[in-house]
Length: 484
Image (cartoon, rainbow, N blue to C red; front, side, top):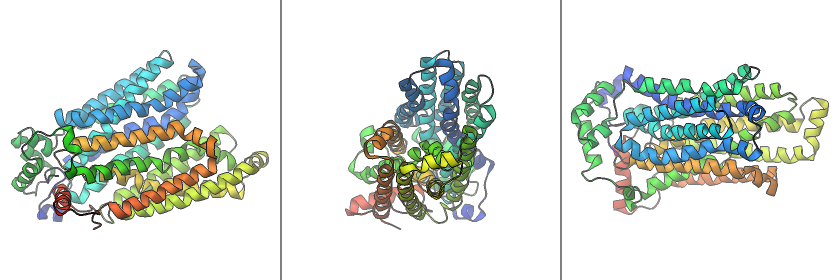
C-alpha cells in the first residue's frame, strides 16, 4: 500500500503532531458514516411496534423489514469497491449519503409494508456503500500515527448512533406517527455526511491512479503541511504500479494472506454473537426484574448503549498506542468468559428464575450475574472486535486492490451478520439458549487463535510498509504471519 494516503508523514510532521482542519473534516466524515448505520440499527426496534399497529404485517414481513437492511448493505458493500475505484472515494461517499437520505424519505412516507421494505433496502444499500468508502477514505487520508484512531471513529459513531436512537425512542414512543418520525430523522445524518464531504478532496492515492498529480500533491500538503510531498507521491506511484487492476488481482497468491485475514476477521466479528446478545437484551432485563417495557428500554439505553459508547473510546484512545493485537486478544478473553457466564445463567433461568423474578419483582442472583456478564461482553466487544477489525481491514490491502479488497471483507461481514440474524432463533430452538452462547464462546476461542497465530501487528506502520511486508512474505515463502 502506498504511503500517500495514510502514508508516510515526514519526521517533522510526526514530531509536531499538528492536526489540520482537513483532518478534522476527515474525522467528521468517518463519524457521520458510522452514525448512519448506528442510528438505523438502534431505531428500528423502537419503530416496529408502531409499524405493526398501522400496517398489521405478518411475522415474515416484520422479519424482512427488520433484517433486509443487512442484505441491502451486503449488495452495497459489493459494488462500493468498484465505485470507490471508478468514481473516487469522495463521490462514492456522497452517493451513499444521498441513498441513505432518500431511503429515509421513502420509509417515513411509506403507505404500506412493501413500500417500507423498498425504503429499508435503499437505506441498507447506502449503509453498505458508506461502510466501505468512509473507512477506506479515512485510512488513506490519515497519517500513520492516527490511522487506527481515525478508522475506529467509524465504529465509535455506530455506537453513538445506537445510543442516540435509544434515547430518541424513549422520547418519541408516545407521539402520534412516532415511527415515521423515528425513521424520517435518518435524513439528518445523511444530509450532514454529504455536506461534510462536499468541501473535502479525494485521497491522493485515487488522484494518482487517475493521473491527477497536481491535486494529489495539494491534498498531501493540505493534510500534512510538514510532509515531504514528493516522497509521498513517489511512494504512491510505486505502490500503484502501471497496470490496470482487475477483480482477479484481489484473489492472486500475492494478496491471499491479507484477503484471508480481512475476510476472516470480518466473519468472526459477527460469529462471536454480538447481535444475538443485543437481541436477547429485553429478556435479560425482564429476568433481572425490569418488569415494564419502559423500564426495560431505559436499561437497554444505558447498560448497552452507554457501555458500548464508553468502551469504544478505549479503542480510539489506545489502538495506535497499544496496537491492534493486544486490544483484540484481551477483548476476546473478556467476550469468551462473559459468554460462558451468560450460557450458564440462561440454563438456570430456564429452570424457573424468570418466573420467580416476575412474581417477586426482584432480581435473582442468577439474573444479576447474567446482566453483568452481558455488560462485560458488550464492553469487551466495544474496545476490540467492534472498532479494531475495521481498522485492520482498511489498512492491510495494497493500494492497487484496496477498494475491492475492503469491499470483499465488508460484504463478508454483512453476510455473516445476516446469517446470524436469520438463523439465531432456529439455533436456540434446536440446541437451547445456554448451549448457543457456549457456541459463541467457542467462536471466541477460534478468533483468539486466529489473531494470535495469523495477524501481524500493524501499529505505526505506513501503508507502504504493510504492503512490503506481504510482498516479502511471498518472495520468502514464509509460513505464519509476523507478530511484531
